[in-house]
Structures are given as structure tokens and as C-alpha cells.
Image 1: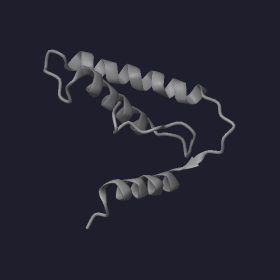
Image 2: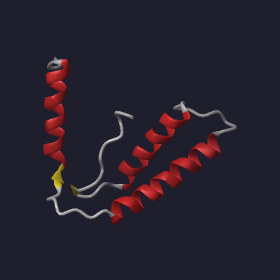
Image 3: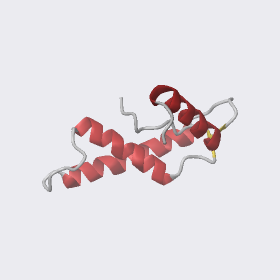
Image 4: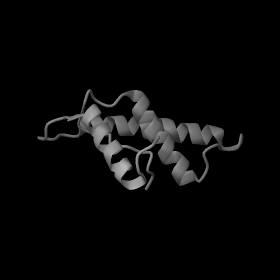
Length: 91
């Protein structure tokens, strides 16, 4: 779907409201087909981001897992390693 939307569940510390909002924003941008809505659509766009962020936070609060929480630094290092394999090391 959208490469900028990252998994937010089962991290220590938990996802911040900013991370949830950014994921909601990326989702709304993707499905609306625009990153900057027209003035006529701005209110609907903002309302959709707010509502999706709100329900996403409820989802994250309600999910249950027996797996150990993932470490953000470790997951970021794995992502960098995958990126280097795919695109080569950056200068």
C-alpha cells in the first residue's frame, strides 16, 4: 500500500500520537490521491485524518499480543540494513 506507513503495534515505548497522526495522514493522502487538498476539500481531508488517527489509536490500545515488544532502534537498524542491500550504501 503506502511505503511510508510503518507498523505501530507492539513497540516499546508505544507509538506516539504524532506517529499515529502521521500514519493517518499518509493513508488519507494515498486514498484521496492528493497530498495537498484544495481549499474546498481541506475540511473533509482534515476531518478524515483526525477520525482515522482516533480509531487507529483505539485499535492499538485494544490489540493484545503474547510476543515481546519490539525495540525501535533494532527495527530501524534492520530497515537500514535492508535498504543498503536493496539500494547500496549511501555516501
